[in-house]
Length: 266
Image (cartoon, rainbow, N blue to C red):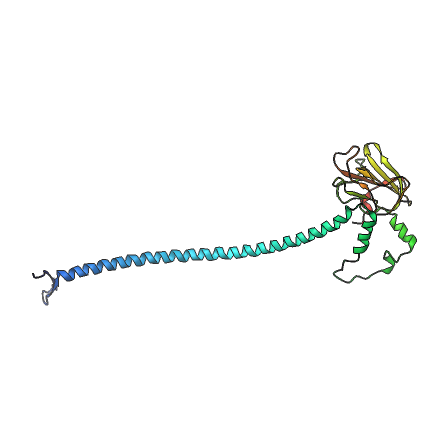
């Protein structure tokens, strides 16, 4: 059986040179198949191009996110290093404060004497040997020891001295049971209950200064005893008229009230 053919004529406007082409139905079918494959190939190519573009955009987003994560990671590392430093500092502070919860004043003085020269200054400082504690005359040393100028408790100032408000002392908020220190050397004038002030210790420093420590939980000294600067004389509490554990600390000079903070060596 003969195959069918299609004849295609190309006729110019002047009707000269007419061209004829015979195409077999078989080749026409092949052409259709090739055309379909071409269209399908173009469609696949367009789809793949879109997919590649999408992947490139996704890759760029991943690259940007990765850069941000790297930056955040560096920030976290820096923060962790700072935390490590804080933890080390916290341990040192706890070690320091650990000396203040010791009740034995001899042990405290021993620890202070052992560590007071451990600090190395960042730069050289000219030393005035006349001012070093161990080089001054004994009388001068005793005079300085009697001045009530050290903090009587490890705590926070919760109420300041005010003559206008008739608050003739400084209040320190501190944990109940924290040690109370003698702010200067002297002789205990009284140690006992004193009305609204609760358990109170009064020390005469034999130089015109008199210091008092009120609202104590415990009294660890007695009347007539000589105490040294920094010695533990009691513990913080809330006896008497007190809304919470704190130390009411006051100083007089020649009988006149004085702001304790004007003497502190912070």
